[in-house]
Length: 98
Image 1: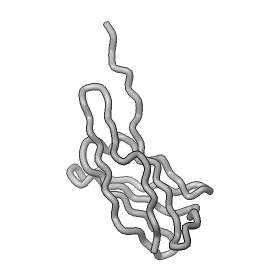
Image 2: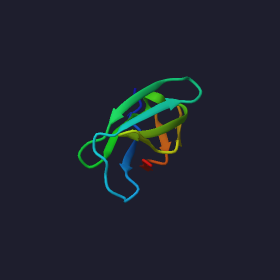
Image 3: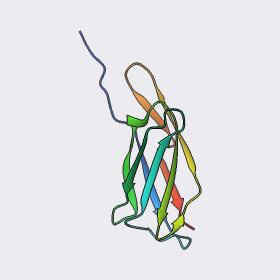
Image 4: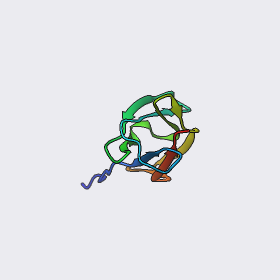
């Protein structure tokens, strides 16, 4: 019997300032708007985190970034799942802290 080969769906989130510079150490918060599942992640030296995965699936996940009192607008991604796998759209997001 063959089972599903599960691959983790994840969103790459890059945080930049208004000048387009990467923001390391920014906090990226994710919340599933339907279930309320929530988590926070910190960007690396390149201003990127890949911590938002299909553990929030299925449904719409609202993402926001903050750094030094500045915040980005909310951005929604959508996790869709079948019996074996989940996909996310879009797979990469750039958030600008203003």
